[in-house]
Length: 174
Image (cartoon, rainbow, N blue to C red; front, side, top):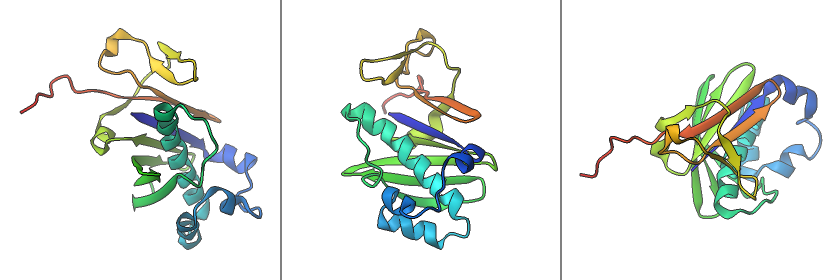
């Protein structure tokens, strides 16, 4: 399964005052708060962690069909981070979601998957042939990508991302 989240950094600066009292404590677990406090660029780390949570939540919602506000139940760890890329995990109960994030001066884009090997098979597609079920969960209805069904859509400010996991038709069991 797949989830994704995109954050327009400029719009976030206009819409959210992450420095206000209680903001960080409301959204982030103690271990995440420590990551934020120890980083020289807390603004980017806050949005990185939030993007990871949002991308993982889209999978959680698809799996459970439960819509709930659970930011502190989705606990992030960062495995690696550079100025333009990050990998990590989001844990929700017993479930682990694997993430990778592209970081630019203007945006963050996080992909979350249930199987780490799927991170290498994510492709961005045009927003067409998408249907939503009764729970509002999007699916790809195009037969041109017959081995894919789950799709994740995210938009914020100037950015929109639509992604799927492209299945390798040539994989054979050994």
